[in-house]
Length: 332
Image 1: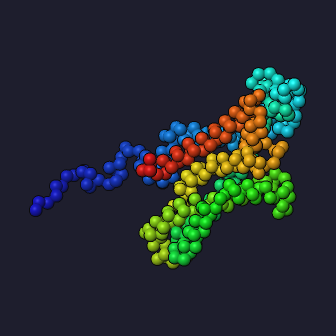
Image 2 (image 1 turned 90 degrees about the vertical axis):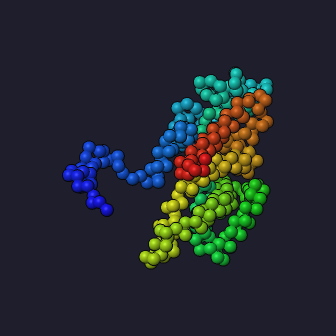
Image 3 (image 1 turned 60 degrees about the horizontal axis):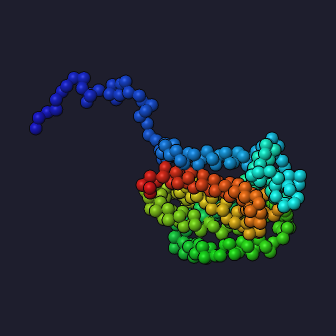
């Protein structure tokens, strides 16, 4: 067996400072899973476009009163001078579109369509966001508990999920929305209708994300870092919220972005069927319901609310797909 070569000044004897001399030390560093996902997401131009559209929609919804004061008229203000009394249709071409009424006016009433779409965005996004928040909170907590503890706890929560999944949500929403009047539970008006829709949509949709979180928790509870926490004396609630929950943020974020457009469509459907937010408060679904009787004389009255729903739902779906690919590229 020969002895190792003794080469003075070789890399074997040189220290790490000598080996890395001239290298960019800032480029040699680890990246977290979040940073890696963000790098992948930035390369997905379609997902970034969806995110930009969503951001613009949120800005428009927040500053709707300011934009209406600059470019439109109050959403509940009638302009009968813009309506032809002989046929009840807007004067002029394209449903009365002009510099004063950028998207035209409603038949019969002459209300500004541009203003009503902006204010409708506030209602739709508000209900969708809060319903998704309620759904995610319930689904995450119950899914984690079912997956972590197992046994009879898992059996009870899983059977509860099955009951909710079999529940006729649309029929129940129609019945409950029709039964409850203008005042209930200490609330009234738009506050009552919005709270009711948030509860119906969020409370009865949590099993979908609950099943996803339960499956992920079943896998995570067998990982080494959970065993290490137990060996150090960590209690169950510490393990759940300090160890397991951070590893569930990616699926929660992805599913939330895919759930929001579903909630927007559900709210629009309820408003279309007449059990959503009551007139004269504008909603996209309510505008579509009114347009059914007038689309032949003013087609833009149906086109623009439909486009608003389509663009919003498409943007959230594109962002959700991009986030899913960024956090789990193998799932493509």
